[in-house]
Image (cartoon, rainbow, N blue to C red; front, side, top):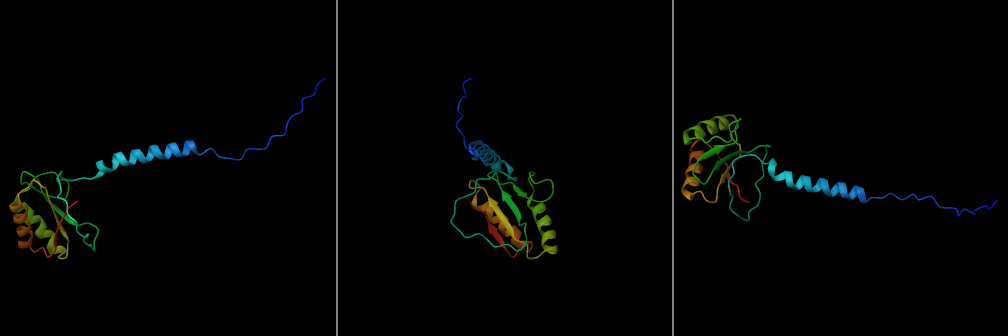
Length: 138
């Protein structure tokens, strides 16, 4: 009977991390693809500007948007995607400002919207009592 001499093998205590890296990269790609789809609101092309961000006391500023066609939108309730008239905007924003006078208002003007439309909106907001109105840029 021939005995084979078995070489003593050391126990391999290493963890193969390549599968974990693969899974992590796939998750990263999924999040990178889905993150832009999570933003809600009216599709406007914001102009480029270098400005400091505005400090807000409360979490949610009121955003009023103007698209390229000159239609107004406000991020209130379930009808955010419904165009509103200037009177509707004045009534809605006026009610909110009565409850919270220091509420921050942001105007998102499409880069293809006329300057006049954006200024009219800002004058309208100032007319209903908005103390602080900011412009959103990219």
